[in-house]
Image 1 (cartoon, rainbow over the protein chains, first blue to last red):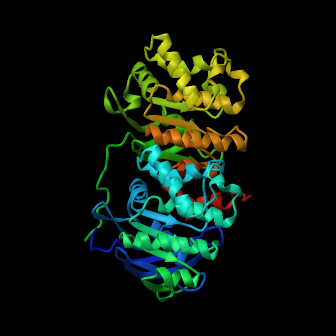
Image 2: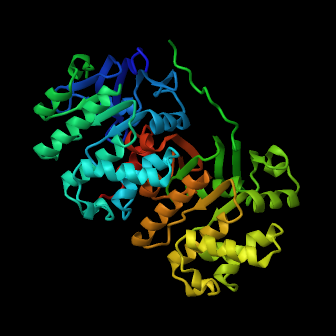
Image 3: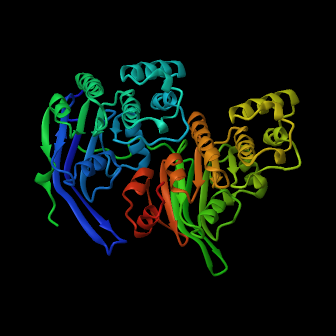
Length: 234
Length: 265
């Protein structure tokens, strides 16, 4: 483990330009600066539309920031996600940087167990070990075993979300971005996810999260971060 | 502390530079350049007539470009412009080190010989002479692409479109290529068959560490298969980047139009 911040966001700005809507420009934030250390969970606060998800996606490399840098500690050095080539970003995502979205987006007709094993197989873990760990995690998330051999397309929202969480937590990413991972879960399942998050933090993960559920937020947040303080002028 | 970009820069498997193709005064593609690393999947997207297939054909040695270079890290000659090789050397390199999966299995298969013979043929072309070994390898590959191995002696026309495509995939992977070209590999298939085939292709790519260049007009296929995308319009590359970034935060007006035109179901 390192005492350096695992995420450094520097002077980040994002403005959307919609070329097919008369080149409308939508400024979101500017000069945004944020650091997250190991074992810390920074929760993004603010109302809908303030740019929480945009910030999260910019850190993941899913959105292309207009300016600034996003440095992620990977293999003993910082990689600037905004400038690294696709090959490097994928490598950082494969081993260091995880992202849990609200929605499950996977190839149709692939069984759930296999989907959860996939991140491990991609990292060279053996089939048997991947299967054991996936089964263990799905049990912990209380997804009925009868579902494991089925593709998740027909599952309820909460079940799909737990599959999504399993796919992300199975890897024990050192840096994890959580975009409302508990949005469609009931109280008991939320508590299980809170436990998973706390375990990962105790093991030294750095996290940035968006939680609208105040119980979850209070349970996991090391501090709150107001995105609106960096609001870009329209 | 500064970020260190490009710390590990393994040698490219394929390096394309200034690739241009004119059909008389009609532009096929202009000034295309990119590097492909081992194990990397590059998607080429764009609408019909944007130059995707011209580009794929130029890169894969099927169509001589008007100008530009296509350098491939060949086993025998190292990183070499494939159009600088003699015709026999180039053909041999294509047979040994590349695969090409066509949209229409009829273009990639010999329809008059059995499915098994189609799969085994690349081994024979590369000097395989032990019939028993080749038959066993064929059975293994039919099994791997999830075909009934008892049908090894059936002709391709007796298989469904999806099955023919699986035969074509097996035929193009059996000899252990390092680079595989795919031209709309799931284009002619039912959506139901498409999903399974895509999953199979993705697994094979991961397990074999293949580099792939896949041409598709289907953004969903691009998202599932490709690590990064090149967006083409009017023969030119207008945008390139990480697949999900290009699809979720497109920068070029044309890419924005393309992505926002996808029907949601």
